[in-house]
Image: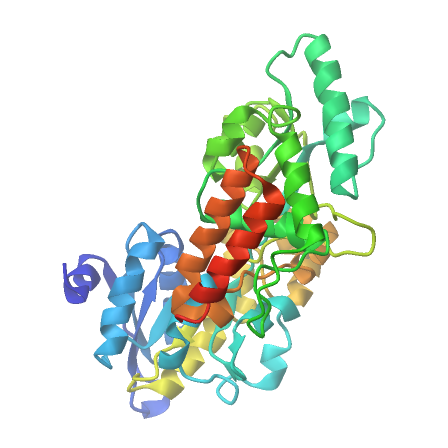
Length: 419
């Protein structure tokens, strides 16, 4: 199917009269399927403010299916797309085809955003994208069970493991035979890259490949972190964890069968929604640290917007980017869709806190986020990530950890340069 066919399958024109007699311009944006309605709303609002028109095209349901579509458009230097909706791990792939927004978005607007999120869009000294919303790994927990046993939310992974085992064993003894201490994602897929990088980074073991291209994964702190996770399997985490993705692990937690649960911010809404057996019993906090003095290191997973270098309307596109990533639309996105803002001051907004009360106490989780090495590795990122998560999965299922990290580092040295 061609990109034009995909675009025509789902697009909305939001036409407006030109303001003040000025010539109106039309831009086109591709937006993710789950974000589509809010993108249309942003286009409508922006059109009313500027007199311009935004054509919003829906991307495939599986976000990664958009990568070849974008590659085709950009390779052809097509002017048929102006604004692109990009996962953070795609930025390195498309960076050479995107405009530098440094002068198109005023510095004071850039500085509104959480630094870690803004910095992830800064590659090779150029601001190639702006964050539309924030996403980071968080720890959910059963407030009622911690209260029952007189415990506070744990600050380190060791404390979490100890508390999880204590509560798990006592609840099982009391008749909850299916109770587990901790559910997370250890299936061999991108989610394990996120979970593992959180453990390693929070233990002082780096983030696989540093921003300068140095492979850092083969170190004792990384080995220690993965070793702890390996010990959890069958102890505080079910054997099924080795095949759990976000949804499978969430199902266990929301069925009332897990004390702690690592996942993304969307779980705040689902765990407190209809059908959840833990509604009203859930707390959320930044991920624990591996060692005192380290950062929480939840994996950064926001979505960005960028402007194609081949856009025929860069100024209008920049105007739209400024609006869709600005405070007005980020507040609408938070209140209407429960998306987490990337603009710091919105974490004190009473309307947003009414919808997302956990934000007030979890700002540190967003500020201390760990980034995957997609910026440096560019088009090689998928291969690098596969090497990492497959290697970690092998270690979790019984493989030698020091030897596995050494061989992993050797493979990554070759893969990182084929970008």
